[in-house]
Image 1 (tube, rainbow, N blue to C red):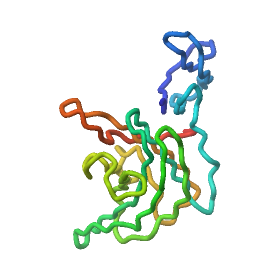
Image 2: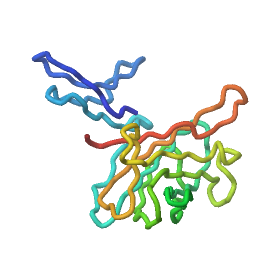
Image 3: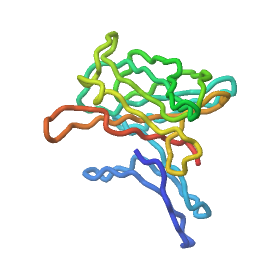
Image 4: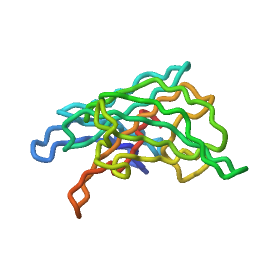
Length: 201
């Protein structure tokens, strides 16, 4: 999955990003690059020989949250609960927003849901995604630490590159990829990384 390319390109030739099979030499994706733009997005989720990343059009009445679970070992479906928190500097408390649920997510398949953020007092801080075995309250990866992922959503933080719709916002389409990995010490699987894919910059 590619997300962005920094491309200082000064030749008169036309540049094209290509995804090519190492063994077959087959070209799967060809994406022309604009030599007048330094930063460009080439975004895809390549599954079973095709690009499955096809986000819906924005809807000004709501937000669209998309999830894609990249897990080569998980065979069953998952349920996901997500919500965001806010920090109140006046009294030092953290308030959790209303949880939202996405049920029966199949690994390697995109799913999108409508989402309207609720109002919670304080400064938005983190969004949390919790993964469960489908139809149960059991953690998908055995315990909370391995089955829960938080992302910073402080939009005034220049180091925060992953965003989340907040109170009063609509018309956003956010596509999150959650990558599972295996701990090399104990061989146990866990949610390791979150990426936000952009259809355009």
